[in-house]
Image 1 (cartoon, rainbow, N blue to C red):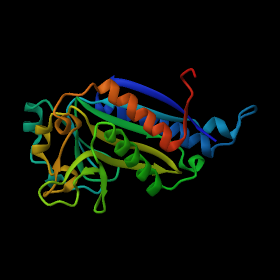
Image 2 (image 1 turned 90 degrees about the vertical axis):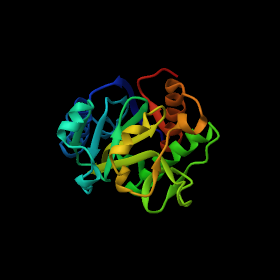
Image 3 (image 1 turned 30 degrees about the vertical axis):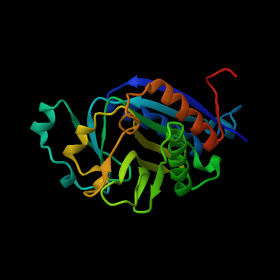
Image 4 (image 1 turned 60 degrees about the horizontal axis):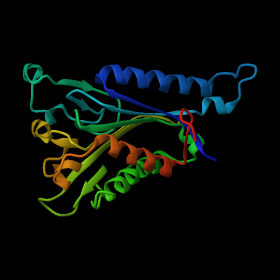
Length: 238
């Protein structure tokens, strides 16, 4: 049975505003699962997920298990560069979000999908791997960290194209992935990306040698996510 999901592409949007928005959806979905159902309401009404695509103005986020030492800028330097910084409640260490990057926030019920958190992350990675394959790139996983990598086992060449950091409570997910399409990679020079000191970061644009149509990439990725999770978009016809 397909999983009903509302898809939203909210464009360029402030990180904190988007965080608050996804948190409101997350809490509503979580609360719906635990409360007594109203007359005429059924269990499936609590099962509808949401998938948000967004680009953020420049911001660094640090996961709950990360180290602030992996950010090389102080508050004054951040402000001078027009960037923000947030400590957040996802897994993983530090990463960067900015224009030209597809950030995805799936707010899904893993209980309805009948998968665990490990399988959920695996499927997110697989959707990215299959997306970049359409551009001739061979993405893969790295045993020492989540996300999608190119040449992960080759010293001096390993580079990440998509970071993943999630949170789950009562089987409901939030946060998600950050896929570098046309991202300005110089922003990663100010951090140890995902806590790594010996691995680089790349983008679809860099790897293909040309700036990509991010709308086209979003369409491909959206379809690959649909395939991986057997999604049914409830706010689209057909």
